[in-house]
Length: 361
Ligand SMILES: *Cc1c(COP(=O)(O)O)cnc(C)c1O
Image (cartoon, rainbow, N blue to C red; front, top):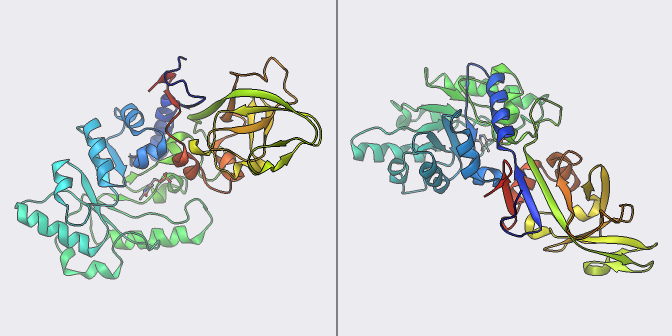
């Protein structure tokens, strides 16, 4: 590895692992198309690299916002790109200019879209979302009687599951039943219900297309083991090592007080890099299988850890330690700070080096 930015933290993204995960998901849903959701800069991991590496096996991508769609279009001239939030009010033409497919989420959006297509004298592809219980996006069951839907020919009908991460929740079946009933109003239109965790609910939920995002990175949806491989690593470098005598304190607020002498390393990663301040409570870095607890508060650019138990030749400036890796996966990290893997990933900062298959972006 060479170091292009001279930063004290680095994110590694294993594109081969992401490709393998996609292949495995596609195999799971055989018969259905396996799209890829790469909204929010591919969950903060770099849409350019990730979408490009999937381009030979994925025909359909999803993003959330029109601007994300425009960016992705420049990268992938020939792929189908759905925009989950649809077009912004008054700007349906952006979709057509960039070859994007809006997901229409309300009757009002359908009305605007149809008026726009009418003005253009031709139909443009659009997807239609059903609200099957989340009360977030999509037309309701009652909306389906509206005049404006008459004769609409969406290229996809879709909905989203609220509780798919809890396989036993009865809401999954209820949403499935509603989705079946609502999609019957548009016979022969391809259907999509499952995101990552929905895929694991079984074939009933796969329909003609699935939309995994987080599973691509090897994060199993229900915490159970499965053949998905972890694709993300995060490491940071020791900047300083010092001895804190008994009675000495560490960090902002001097919240940690050493009862015995401690060897303490200052590591070059902090909350500006996406390490939550709440990580101070139970968090740790790792050297191999050695756990090195965080001491005191997390600073913006650094944090302190206990390296008393490490050999001197390891506890020294320049040594790299692991935050996300085999000993501590994203789910563990998320649990430690009281959140979910999605938030950990999308909170990761932008100033450190990012390595894709070993080479720096
Ligand atoms: C984000 C999102 C997905 C992907 O979700 P994952 O849980 O990351 O697989 C799929 N569909 C919709 C509508 C989404 O908003």
